[in-house]
Image (cartoon, rainbow, N blue to C red):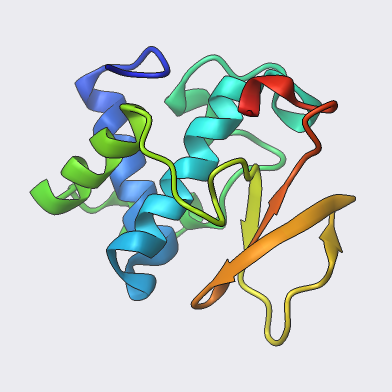
Length: 140
């Protein structure tokens, strides 16, 4: 059962985002990016208090994703990516993205904080960051 309201078009958008941001990190890397996206829609806090849909989250500006500025994002979602996107929309969560609202790909080590948020872990090329439960209780 979905943890956020969505439709098949939005699932495909999320699948494209997950692929464009983390295909090189494999399925788990893409699932972690999906966790961040779903968490942003759920959170209703910080920079994400006006997001009401996956579409809002994916195309948020400023503060959105660099991938939407690249041609690869606009290629059709494949069945594998759609399946992964549906998993995170249905509530599957994975560490270190379980409660994360941010991730990025640093050239070196992950900083302890990013945008004043705590480092929750690294998976391959991406560092993940989560808010405190007091800041964003809907994420937890």
